[in-house]
Length: 181
Image (cartoon, rainbow, N blue to C red; front, side, top):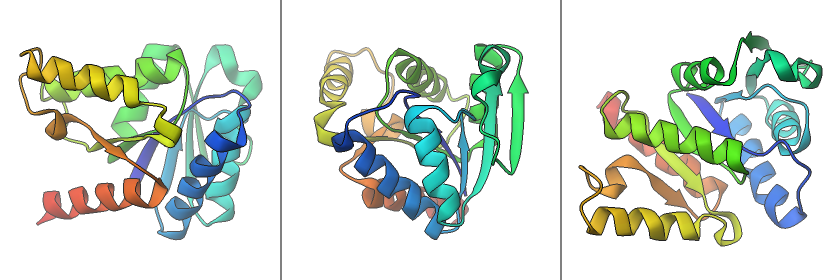
């Protein structure tokens, strides 16, 4: 499976990097391909290193303005002209999406993917790895949106939350089996 991963390009505390790197290791060991922002910076670079060391194929989709941070060890490295094109390519190249910890860029990517799914523009599973309760506020807000009629579909059909990397991959693999079966 090609798994698109959104995450921070910043250096982060071990409480965030540890679970992300465990997820990346499992992704590689289970034979999946990492599709990600193509950066060598911060968590993005660390996730790519760990996934590659565990046997994953790497497809990086960088953006021109950040080409100085391009990950040179990718099996395939694409440079998009702008962030909107990059987001579209990240979604198009993945069979599933995992959202690791990140800032505004990660949140922008994740909410666009969920919005597109809401409008039936794709059926890919979307899982947030809720490391150390990082996405608890978002989960509460989405739950409120669902309860108060702002979502046209049940929240769990749009997005799921996982406690750890194994749980995230299990959810993606189960969703893929359901789509094939």
